[in-house]
Image (tube, rainbow, N blue to C red):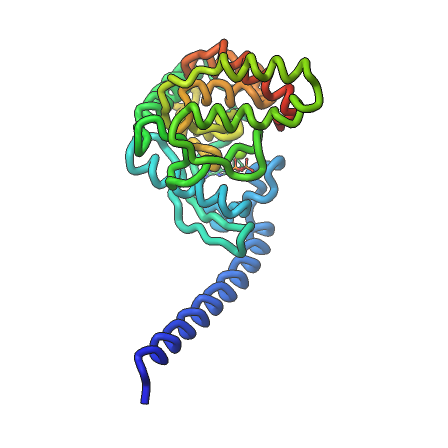
Length: 297
Ligand SMILES: Nc1ncnc2c1ncn2[C@@H]1O[C@H](COP(=O)(O)OP(=O)(O)O)[C@@H](O)[C@H]1O
Ligand SMILES: [Mg+2]
């Protein structure tokens, strides 16, 4: 006689074996698709060999499971609530606790880094206007609770610049600042001069910024632009990509993060200042904290 408990165990076993089978099939298919891709498609970006086309319009991106989960959640959320062009998410799964895979649609065109030098002045102006509009839409998205700092999935923040591990989420900016300054503790313990400066920084950090949705890795490699001719309307932003470090952050975060990387588009800093509100005091303080912390890519 089957008892309810034995039926439940049987169903659980069937579920487990089905998952295992699906995982095996998916791995095999992926190995085949990657080998096929290397034969058929050029690299999307020589600097990012891990991100590949597996069909003409579908991109495979492997990486840290938690960051990819945050990236997929953000792209779904942004697609639903704004008119910002973001890749369509076809699937995201984890291979194990640390490795994941993301399948997403391809945004037509090339990285802004590669096309910016070839655009006409009018086309550059159009790109600036589009980016300004998209960032304004992003910044208008309210956090789930006022002042809440975390990612679109409702989980912690990811930020390669500060920590390899996720951090937060935080109920407000004061908690976020507390965590941020705690990164400097080790250096403060080693030097009394640094300890005094860290204490000064702790008290000068503001807790009253608005909290807004932030891409968190805005760079000329993460903006895809499609150019079809020389006319002013022949160039457009076709995608903002790479949302793994996005989420609700203090309003200055986008500015500070965008300027942090060593972007290779000549006038990137000028472009940033034209599309995002400027927070010079926060930027100076952030730079100093990064210097003490030793963080940064
Ligand atoms: N959905 C997409 N559409 C078009 N190109 C993409 C897309 N996703 C990634 N790429 C290309 O691959 C590169 C690396 O992808 P990205 O997601 O930025 O990876 P990483 O997190 O390593 O920076 C991008 O700079 C871009 O050239
Ligand atoms: Mg990128």
